[in-house]
Each structure stands twice: as structure tokens, then as C-alpha cells.
Amino acid sequence: MNIYQVIKKPIVTEKSQVLSAKGKYAFAVAREATKEEVARAVEALFKNVAVGEVNVCRIRGKEVHWRQRGKRPLEGRRQDVKKAIVTLSRGKIELFEEKKK
Image 1: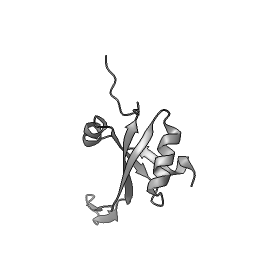
Image 2: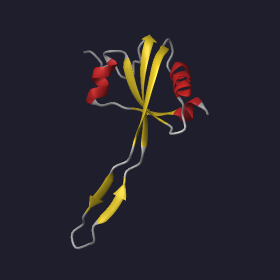
Image 3: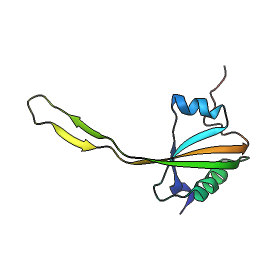
Image 4: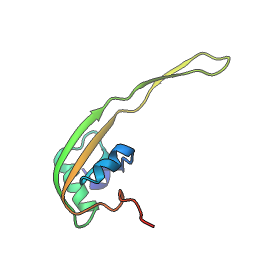
């Protein structure tokens, strides 16, 4: 699998900001991606980093219901997501660092 297909986007939330202070970074990855592929992709995309550990979890999409006035309620389901938390043994990823003034 191509490294640009493995990592879809970074996950930037309050919890991921706390983890980034500890050297852990969260990414949404392809469902077929393995831990080894995620590690290789992170090392290739971000220079001067070494991946120490990769943890992966699959999150099932939630069922959603919404109503529109005067119409039947609609039902659907959000997309499933595979999330990878990458622990770096060396280096930082500047994308997650907050800018200091």
C-alpha cells in the first residue's frame, strides 16, 4: 500500500493535544493498513522521527437519526474509522505543536 494511502489525516482534538506532549500522535488511517505500514508511512512523511510503537483501534460508526419539519425522520450511519496512535522514540511532528507568539 502506498504511504499516501495509509495515513488519511491527523486527528486534532483536546485529547490528542495532551498526548502530543507525551510524544504520542493520533492519525486516521486506512482500514486495511497494518501497524508496520503505519510506522513506515509516518517515518517517510515526517523527517527526523523514529517510530517506537504503534497502537491501532477500529471505531464503529454511530447510528444517527434526524428529523426535518413536516417530513419523515431519516436514519443513517456514520463511517467506520481506524485510528492509530503513534509513539515516537525520537523527534517531533511539528503539525501538532502549538505556535508560540
